[in-house]
Image 1: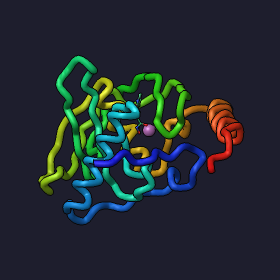
Image 2: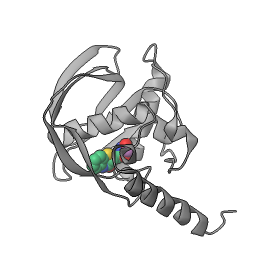
Image 3: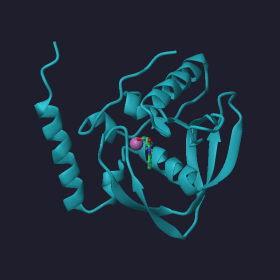
Image 4: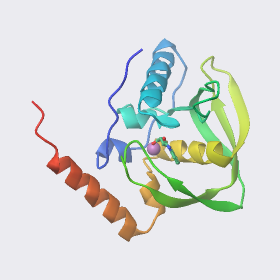
Length: 173
Ligand code: GNR
Ligand code: NI
């Protein structure tokens, strides 16, 4: 297991479309375990491979609360095969946009198809925070961040703050 460094916007690797995985092998399984460890320690409820600099369609999610049993989801090539017309606002954050939050409109419910860690095709319905998280993570595979769903004014405010935070960082040796 390993904690992987999480990329912070602006970074061109966060804007790149990730490639489909042809076969889930030990390398992909190891990547998913490392992503779970990285997500838990961040802490976050989801993580997409592009956020750790890997341009592959791999996502991990766990929306269990701190006092609940962990419920890790490992998804390869996830796709939304149905989305409700019904939409709702939710205040989102992102490990690649640290300390930035904004209201995003998304479908209330989605049906997701993915390949699991044993190469089996699976489907499930998600709503609530899980539905939002799945949509947020699949966006990452397309090079889309939550700020791409809000007004240009709010997006630029957030991106400028992050640019400034990066400039103000002490020089690392
Ligand atoms: O940890 C996360 N929390 C979160 C909160 C609201 C909506 C989406 C998310 S996903 C985020 C982790 C992350 O950046 N995944 O890509
Ligand atoms: Ni994110």
